[in-house]
Length: 423
Image 1 (cartoon, rainbow, N blue to C red):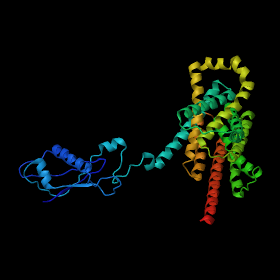
Image 2: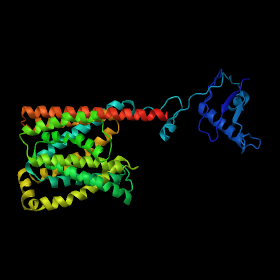
Image 3: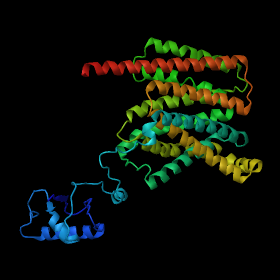
Image 4: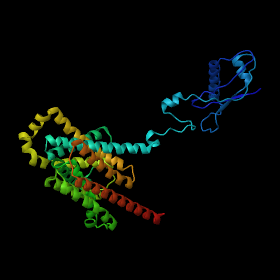
């Protein structure tokens, strides 16, 4: 008589499946399973059972065909072979989707298409930046108070950060006195650069402000060499010459030129340069999202006093009334809220985007962003520019691109040289 071996696990997670055949009748499956379980239980409870404590023998029970015949009929049953069918995994899937080792878990969309996700980040970064610059300039056309508007930008951003911390996205990183002292100069430079940028936006065309801000790499190079003592290669200084030349040409014939807009943009360049210097000194284990959140909150505290002292009396006398009379209270409040939200989101998206790419892509992305902002602002506001201004702007942007590419290549060569001795 052939025997049928059923593997019984304790505790029982799987029921063995048998394929039985009889010449004259078919054994009901449920009856057979119940009887098998009854016999298994008796075997487990027997004092001679191999399933005793501290035994490592694999638990198995052999049921002869005679025993099976007594359970079903007097006629012997023929056993073809031991058949183990796949166990239905519905319960396991509901409990946690345990894999059987044959099918590996499917990759997420972001893991399968990283280039597409990075491209989406770039698009959103550019899109939010362009929308912010356009909406920000439109607000200044009927509410020319850049100090107060700067406060609104940071106030909305600070509120966004507090709500994000409250829901745990991201989890708030603790801050101590030492870290607060490190972030204070960073936040001060961030506040000064942001306010001066808005003063320039309110005074001159958006395209001209961004043309002046193209000089920021020049100030970064100067600070690195003369403040930090880092030696800047002559090739980098040479690539900055077109930037200076282009900005000079654009400034001489810019139709919207005034000294307030020009000087404010230059102060913004200096402030953001020192922000970069202090940021390197304040590098900690805290993630960039939390660092930017704390910087925004501290910068807000720096921006409130000058806004109150410089623009407070004018705002209370006629500033708010004039704005509400021109566009209405609802649109006025809506515009202030959205420029603050777009400002915070595009800065956050910029940080998230630049973390995903190499320095070379970072450099190209920054240059293209400025081109997009200048181009869209000219189209939307219909700013008339002279031929010389257009040529100067193009030369300045080209110079920034050359400088950024050269700097990225030099940094890559330094990293490779540093890896060779260690390897």
